[in-house]
Length: 273
Ligand code: PAF
Image (cartoon, rainbow, N blue to C red):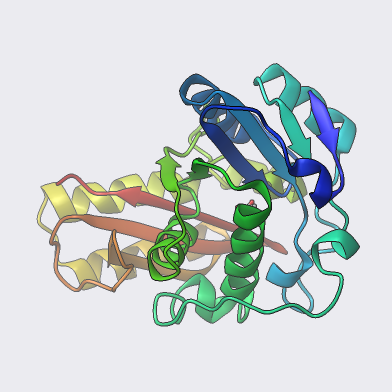
């Protein structure tokens, strides 16, 4: 594993297919699984660790976001990463930079609750794509809207690379793996898997039992509140562009964001086609 901190050192990866897994560090098995998938499909595997200040709003967790470079390097090495790019904020943003903004797709859901977040994501991902110049880049489907935003940006800006979106990895009790799970207290951690259980229950209600979408979603929000969550949204959307659906029409996904104390969890579930 070669650790690279400067953009100028990213130049030569040799020949073959270059895979790229961008991350904000605090790596868990979800990231490791993306890396292992990429390892199996690419000749050279690059990953990045960069907590991107541009995608955090005021009052969000930029300062306290977990940073664990030594452990992350170990995980990356074990997952077969060849080059781990760990730039400083100054290296990535030597000045106020040009920003990339993906319209419409970012108006709702995470975009509405986290204004500016997706401009930050699109900007840094576009910059990282240009720095690393990968043939294929890997993202986790846990951030479904992020995947849609990146797909749209790549299409709109004619960025020449392939995108691979990989299934969410879950803990044994169903909780989607996330670096932010580390914030949960023991009591919150016990409640957290209910979010996924609710997604499963609502998916069955809508897709199998034919329950009316509005009432199924309202019941879901109420159950989450009763369990101690503060839901930001729990919605049925079209999987491709995250348009809200008031009737079940595949490809559809349930998406959810809910807070437990100061920790915000997001998750989603694709309904059967
Ligand atoms: O999903 C993430 O970890 C981040 O949003 C990403 C894609 C690495 C951009 O900072």
